[in-house]
Length: 202
Ligand SMILES: Cc1cc2nc3c(=O)[nH]c(=O)nc-3n(C[C@H](O)[C@H](O)[C@H](O)COP(=O)(O)O)c2cc1C
Image (cartoon, rainbow, N blue to C red; front, top):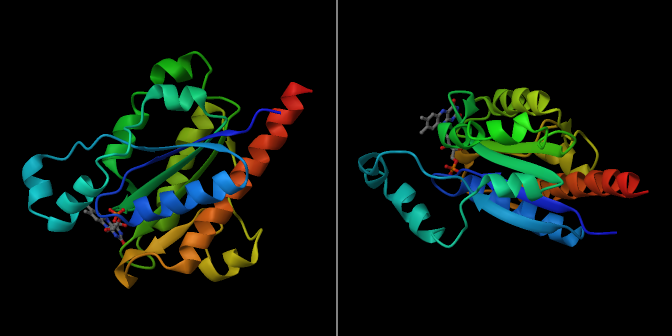
């Protein structure tokens, strides 16, 4: 059977979500998927970015990562979205990308794919779950198959968020636990998408 195509589509200003996205890509590749790691377009004004050295630096460091396009969604059997929490919601940069998907949605091309999401916030109760659930609203509209990590692996009892991998950025860069949780989440998404793909091919 053809491998699962997984698109990991993310926004990251200062690198946290980027680190989780890379770990997810590792987990998915190990599970046999073809992976496209894609950042969404930056929409913030240059003066806001240049006022934050970590933000400017991250943009330079990830200049080689291809920008997400609608073709990536069309190609994918499964999509993992990553976004920082912004006042308990997904970042506007990711929403801006999602808001371009109308033509695919209208043709039914976003339905029946597997979707899952991960996030980071500065504080432990800063809106991680609400951010992931907010993305879920879109997945429902698309007719997606939402695959959360739940407590399906021992790592989930350490990372502690059944909705999706989450990291508290205020504690520093993601360490082994959130990175392993991201790998697990990606593997679970790929395994589920593989079952669906095999079933459809049969
Ligand atoms: C406009 C804005 C709103 C934010 N809102 C929240 C929030 O509601 N809760 C929280 O804990 N952190 C909040 N943060 C912190 C970010 O979630 C945190 O910096 C982010 O997870 C880092 O991810 P990144 O390194 O991938 O950019 C906010 C940051 C900005 C700039």
